[in-house]
Image (cartoon, rainbow over all chains, first blue to last red; front, top):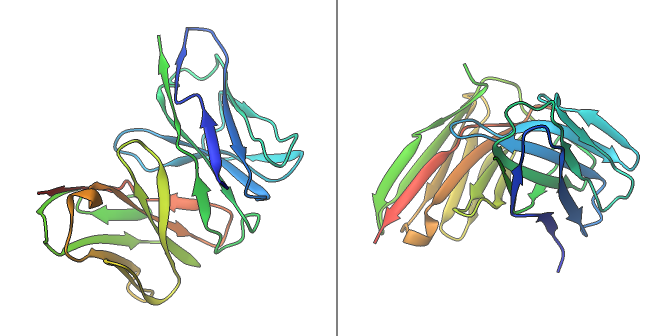
Length: 115
Length: 108
């Protein structure tokens, strides 16, 4: 089955702790994205990557970091510098590397809660 | 003002009703997407439009480029259509710009 998987489904973070959210795709897509969803707001772009070993900041990158060492994987680390991390995080991938009519395919999401 | 506005924010309908969700945008776009977010959080792409109209089953999406407006229609609505429907536009870059979504509840 082709698709995008995210883990874990729920994640709890303690104060001062870094946590990493996993995103894996087997769709052979070049582009991958991380979004944050908060109640009453549209999805906001955190980071994106159009090719392996390259990534760019999105609109709300502060307090987050990513890596893209493999085409299939784009993990997101929520660092202790992110003061309001409680949100629903969605990973997506796209075929045309960010072309202007690209369809993005979304993972099931990870809900991050602060203890 | 958001670049992508959806209305209504919330919608409750009886099973069988015809439903319309609206999306207006203020930027130039190359494509508009309608997405469906299930109660568990997963998002699926329903349509990508750059002009005209598309139909898939009971769902119809239309776009008027001159008026910067799109509508998503659901005919013969069913409780399984209950979800959040999100409009997103591509404005010629890598980015989607998302609306805040319309929460639809269809009652049996």
